[in-house]
Amino acid sequence: MKTPWWFLYKTPLAFLLLPASLFYYIGSRAVYGWRKMFAYESRRKIICIGGLFAGGVGKTPIVREIANRFDMPVVMRGYRRSAKTGNIGDEATMMMRDGIIVHVGHRKSNIILLNRQTNENGPILMDDGLQNPSIKKDISIIVINENLGFGNGFLLPAGPLREPRRAAEKADAIIIIKSDKNKRKIKLPENVPVFYAENKNVMPSGKYDRVVAFAGIGYPKKFFRALNNVVAHRAFGDHYQYTDKDIQDLFKLAARKGAKLLTTEKDWVRLPRDVRKKINFVKLETKIEEKFFDWLKEKVNANDKKNS
Image (cartoon, rainbow, N blue to C red; front, side, top):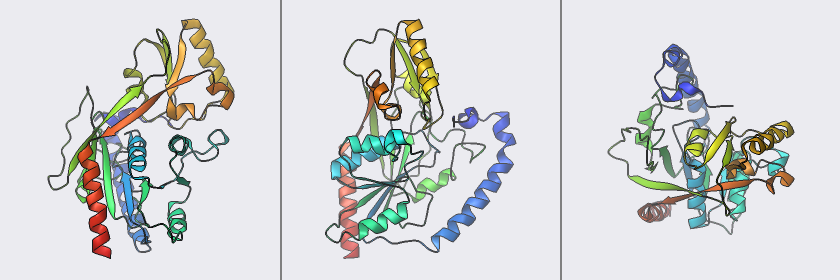
C-alpha cells in the first residue's frame, strides 16, 4: 500500500475524513482498554521503540543501532513475510544480516518464550507495538523524523497519526532523526528527554553516473532526493512484493536510460536471489548521539535496582 498523499498536508480531503478519524480514535481506545486488562509483565525488561506516525519514519535503523550496541534480541511482527525473505519479513532480514537475533511473529508469544530462557536476563528490544498494551513496557521510546514531523497532525485515516500528539508526553524518551532540508516544526513535550540521530546513505562501490532508482518504502521520495544522478524513479507501496514483470520492466527502463538500477536495502532483500546479484542497494546507516546510550544504560540499571 502506498502512503496516502494527504497525510502530510491539511487538504480538503483530510478535513472530510476527520469524522472517520473520530470513530478510529474511539474504537482504538476501546480496544486499548480491553487489551490492557490482560497485559503480560515480562521477567526481562522490555524496551519498546515505536512512533505516533504510521510507517516510514526510519524506526528500524534505530532499532538495529540499539540492538547492535547492547547485543539485545529483537521481537517484531515481521510485516508482509514472504519466501523471498525466508518468511521473516524485510526488516527482520536486514537485522539478521547484521548478526542480530530476531524473533518474528506474535510479539507476546515470543517474549514469553524468551522469558523461559532462565540463563538470560538482559533486556528485550521490541520493534513497534507502542500502541499495543498487551505487553507491559519498562522503557518506551518514540522515534520522530524531522522531515515528516507529525504530518498534517490528524489521526488515521485523515492523517498519519496512530494516536494524538499529546501521547508523546507518556514516552520515556524521544529520538529525532535529523534532516538537512524540508524540516518541519515539531512541538515536543518539555518533560521528556530528546536525543538526536542522523542518517547516512552509504553508496555501493562503483560509478553511478546515471541511476534508475526504485523503492517500496513508506516515503520513497526521501530516498530519491538523497541520491545523485537519478534519471528516472519508480515508487511502489510499502513492503511491496516485486513480481517478475515489475523486475523486467525496471531492467528495460534502466536499459533505455543507459543507467544502473539502485534501490534500498529493505527493497533489495525482497528481490529474488538471482536478481540481487544484478542490482545494488544503498545501505542506510543511522548514528544516534552517544549521550542517548548513556541515558539508556542508566535507565535500564535504574529499573533493575527498582525491581530487585
